[in-house]
Amino acid sequence: MATRGPKRTLTVEKVAATALQLLDDEGPAALSVRGVAAALAVRPNAIYTYVPDRAGLERAVIELVLSQSQLELLEGPARHWRKRIRDYAVSLRALLLDHPGAAMLMMSAPMDSPSALEVGERLLGVLADAGLSPTARARGVWLLIVQVVGSVALDVAETDGRRPLPPEAERVVARRQALSQLDAEVWPRSVAAVDVQASWVTSEQFVWSIDRVLDGLAAAAR
Image 1 (cartoon, helix red, strand yellow):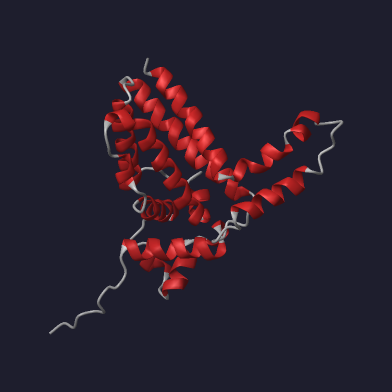
Image 2 (cartoon, helix red, strand yellow):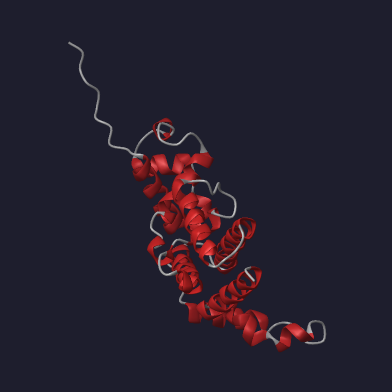
């Protein structure tokens, strides 16, 4: 009688969780199929049973992170469409900043996992409540995704990409110190705006930017 082989203990979710842990602990440069295999104490070929390639590994990580986003914040009365988007955007930004390596990954990895598609689907619904045309809704989703992911990527780019990021106040101070070295004769407008530019990594700046995006979307609905 044939004997059974060892019971499989790996899953796509476990592979993704291990990859995310590597990103959190060591930053984007640490992510590789071999690195994940080593962390799981298996051969690299075992990982390919669950993800087909590096792009598949990245897709699995993005799926894991986005599956944790608070999509319920996008639900509610049509008249509150702005608040629904703002609340979700702030929440998603906080989630991505909590996983800075994964946030950087989103700048180049495929954004077609089920949770990524669900985010887009929900946003299309909210923008329908806002009164936008189908074309404007689709363009609006792109605008919102770029605003959130792009702003987080810029914030994380000034760090080592490891979790946890320094507190917001510390990052503002660091930016202020770096900007204080600017030559006022060469970049006078930038020097005059140093205090505001130092605060670009703050939640306040992010909410301001989202509100300006929502102003534009509201105007597109008229």
